[in-house]
Image (tube, rainbow, N blue to C red; front, side, top):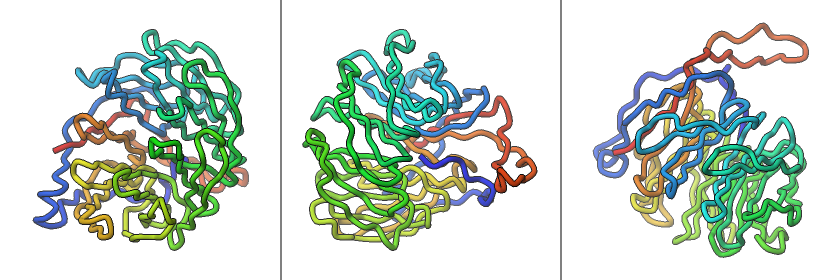
Amino acid sequence: MKTMRFATLAALSLLGLASPAAAQTAPYRLLHTISVGGEGGWDYLYVDPAGERLYVSHGTQTEVVDLKTRKLLGTVPNTPGVHGIAVVPSAGRGYITCGRSNACVAFDLKTLQGVETIPTGPKPDAILYDTYSQRVFAFSNAGGKSTVLDAATGKVLGTAELGGDVEEPATDGKGHIFVNIEDKSEVIEFDAKSLNVLHRYPLAPGAEPTGLAYDPKNNRLFSACANEKLVVTDSRTGKQVAVLPIGKGADGATFDPSTGNIVTSNGEGTLTVIHQDTPAKYTVVATIATARGARTLAQDPTTHHLFTCTADLGPAPAATTANPRPRPSIVPGTFRVLEFGR
């Protein structure tokens, strides 16, 4: 997902629910703060409901949180530049993209130790396990590729040529994969078996889409864009259904079919909650405070809780010719997970 862009994002004061309707459709509140500590940046979170675990990317390792106790269970080591995590319970293994080494690390779910390192395309970022095809897709944020793996063995089965800077994916569970293309401001559909691109749908006026969520019942794609817009697309026709305002620095999106809520996580320090009134009508119902830098998001499909993560930020180093826009420093020991629910 997007790298941290905090220099232009100001911390916000606490914002309440937007209306009485919001209290019925989106009564999310902070339930727990899970202290993780350590150093380094962060990206994706991943909920494994079967294992009751939360996997959190963190610097050069992946933190594993027990969702029963909300305690740190362990870490998957040696995942430099970690971005995405996918778990395959039937195979007893998981997969982690490592942007710094252009590789995907397969690890054992019991021991949390790496079992093999698989070369991928450049800058692997998002990753998806598709149960229909029994494949794992490791998406490159540079080069427009997806390295396709056999979920059970890690064997490379092929490469999907997608074109552009690939961001977050989603699956319809029927052999079709959707993914945002950041630099082209489009969402595409490709076949999980043949790997052929089937459709390209423009997202303008949305620009630089990152987070993606999907409603399989109503065939709706929800693309969270960098220019503070959520674009709703009909996945069958490519027709835009709605464009909604969201917060600054969005990098994650979820959809909860039990509530009809779409939620984006915004690096400015908010969640934007949008309600699906009908498949053709959407309403922003709440803006909920999180913390500055909490820009990625995962949802537990069993409890319907939302998870995001951040750390305290210090001053940015002085700008240089090589790095004219340095990021703020990260205060060691302050990395934490925020859990929201009803």
